[in-house]
Image (cartoon, rainbow, N blue to C red; front, side):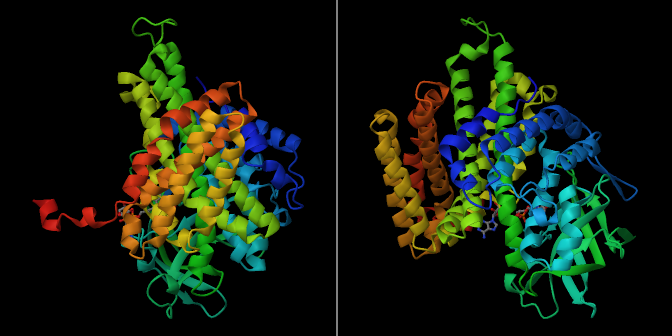
Length: 567
Ligand SMILES: Cc1cc2nc3c(=O)[nH]c(=O)nc-3n(C[C@H](O)[C@H](O)[C@H](O)COP(=O)(O)OP(=O)(O)OC[C@H]3O[C@@H](n4cnc5c(N)ncnc54)[C@H](O)[C@@H]3O)c2cc1C
């Protein structure tokens, strides 16, 4: 079954679940009417179905490669990029002053999710550009903005992010790349970066790298890091790509999946760069890009989940095995369990992603600090739960296929192999969970508590019509509140960190139930209600075990000595 864009899910979520009307009623997003949203989703969906989805398999079979120092992308990717660029999908949320469409992130997130469902490897390229666009909009000089933003938004040029070095992965502060001032306002950047997604390509005129490096007077750690824009070709006085900069792709990684996306080792040898943001203020600027990318990577997980679900459903509708009413495996209870879980989880993760994006939009449109805190709280949950859902659902998709799931020609395993890295890059999911229980609780748990109040109030109100669904949602939220208070009370951070991952999952389970409940209210006699009932009856109860783990503390984890681990 070819990929089908889940437009009706987005429309329902926008209309009844994540409050898109609130976004559209702000002055900033007043043009995002229902008609505009519908037209955009339909148009983007068509491009994903017709242009991007056919590129999914060829990218896997014919990976990006380096030939005599020249990066070659998979067949068809250049046309795919052209379609993405010409559709305006890169600069959807970009500033109209520089060629963007100024549309809400909620809408961009829906389009990004569709693109990742259709072809994850290729979609990573515009995602990197979008992160760079946002970082430049917030932190670059006017000259850099004027020169780079229109080209990045139109897709003539592309963007990358360069943080990771061999000894500096999760610990970005350990990086050793250097930048020396040239005395003319530019800098010479030197060092080696690894794992750089789309570090080069053969379809854009220029590739613009955002590189973290340390100035000579930069202190050790994250506080001494600055951010530089380092283009592959130095723009000439007309702003066209001129002479080649002193940088190169050293090699391209051989990976478990995501073969169409070139993951590059980059070498900078005194490459000319321009500072973005303040000297030693690189992390603040990079965080803008990383937060954008975390929302986007959460969406990659949702997209992969949707693609894997559609693939598995098509197989279940065809595969004959055992005596069933329809003659196919879709009537077996365990296959039903798998498909229902896949669909219900994907819906929950999608709702969390859109709620995250909606909070970002409301923060941008109103400047209200509470919306900012909501967005910050939801970001690690969106990233980690979205990507875990992508992994879990695509792994289940392999299982639905039985033995054929293990055979490459069905394409089932590609979803799993491709999405696996999303739990690792953009800050591992472990780091996301630590962010949730530490930085995002620095307010004493206030932002979390406000969200839990809202969920409980809504459940109270839903009791009148859907008591069997609303009751469990209220109870789960109350348990989550108790654990949140326990977490905030732990002054020993390791006690918080020990249970951070299960806590984040329990939080996502409760959020998912809340959004399912809203969807069930909107369509109380249709499939939305049935899906919500399954989620709340079968998946939500996981919170009990997760919250017990979350409060277990660190002592048991350190009970074995390192020697005992090894013995
Ligand atoms: C395909 C791919 C594409 C990538 N694209 C990019 C890119 O475009 N740009 C870029 O800059 N980087 C990119 N990366 C790098 C990626 O962001 C890092 O791999 C990731 O941040 C983890 O760093 P690491 O690999 O060094 O793992 P490590 O940091 O060594 O982590 C190993 C394990 O230890 C855990 N761990 C580490 N520190 C802590 C801690 N303080 N507390 C608890 N647990 C901890 C981690 O969660 C993980 O489970 C990419 C990686 C891959 C594989």
